[in-house]
Image 1 (cartoon, rainbow, N blue to C red):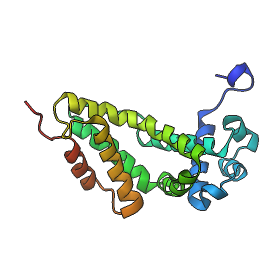
Image 2 (image 1 turned 90 degrees about the vertical axis):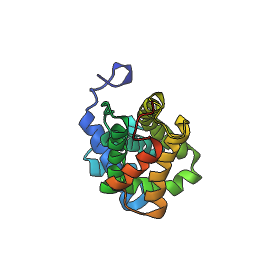
Image 3 (image 1 turned 180 degrees about the vertical axis):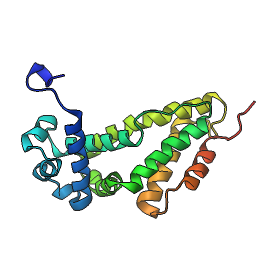
Image 4 (image 1 turned 60 degrees about the horizontal axis):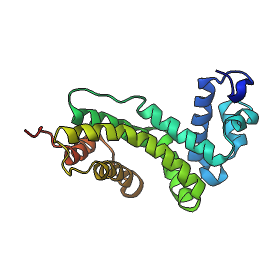
Length: 194
């Protein structure tokens, strides 16, 4: 597949991945305010024009890097016959991303700038909404099986994600498997209602 309009060489997924990984590293090291396309390009091993052809702004680049990080955490939805176990897998992967690599540091570095920059906040919201779709699929299944404790799909999603982000960003407590299990049990009844 070539660039839009049929011009240029096809895009290479590994180039995009390198750019997004470099973006998360720069966010970790210097924060959003000091992030430059030049430094991202240097760390990714590409030229600045390569980055600019993909993103017309720093906010757009950062948003894509965050989407990329979330896609690495949960590239596809696991669906078995146990919706609670499936949600545990999804949330455990998210917690691992928040604590084990540059993605978590990037999230921390973006909280304050997003509160002051409406375009950045909007782009990050799009990234969050894309991942929310995965969780909604599982929470909807729990609702359909009469296992959703609150009965409210959106509030249940907010509760799960809000608890994880609060614990990571504010309380700075561990996001381990035991915590994820307790969190999922508070959203989904472990025993199917008859």
